[in-house]
Image 1 (cartoon, rainbow, N blue to C red):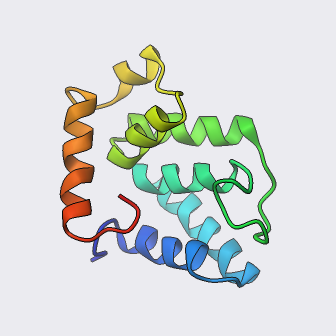
Image 2 (image 1 turned 135 degrees about the vertical axis):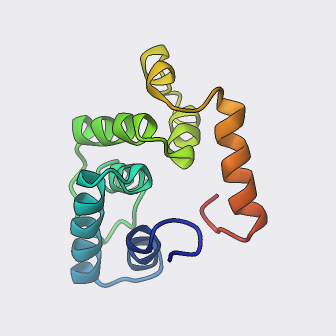
Image 3 (image 1 turned 90 degrees about the horizontal axis):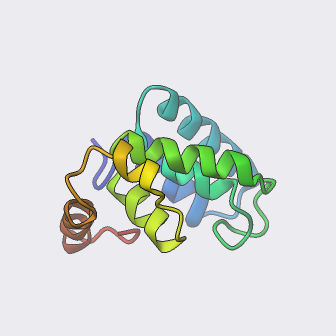
Length: 126
């Protein structure tokens, strides 16, 4: 099982953020998309970053900025219980009241606690 996230998400993070190979980046995004369709909220969050422009993914990767897709995936990540999705939405000032209602956490502090535990365990993305 993945060290911090699911196996698919851990592998995709490695291929997206630690590799300069566009083919691996495309494969990683496809894997994230499949995982997202299967309910993986963290996959939704990292996929949203692929659509968010070069300030959220490597400039040389083959992803086109798509604000609507990025927002839809971010929204889905929160609804599916991604703690990093919740904190990412807060960071971008996009955690709307509607999104807050959809999140399965009692509060944003509860999401923070999940991320904090991963960070204590050494997660470089938390």
